[in-house]
Image (cartoon, rainbow, N blue to C red):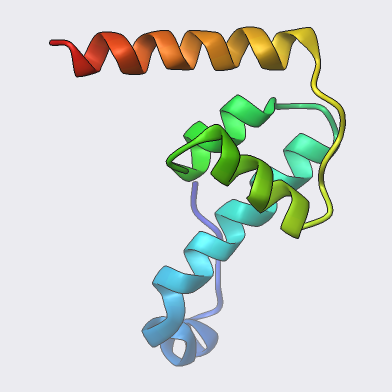
Length: 89
């Protein structure tokens, strides 16, 4: 995904772009989660967070917590299964 930034602003922001890119990705994840477009497990995957607890903490810190759905739990189980499978290979 590319976000167009005028050249004069890009030059000034260049030293901070990696941090700004991360913040933009976090904002997208929060917006999508808040609007029920993605699950907590998908937030974790998108942001490469290390655990479900880290994801919950991120969501809570940003005021984006909502109750778990069955789909959230199922996706968490699938993510754990994949992690365990990858770990044993």
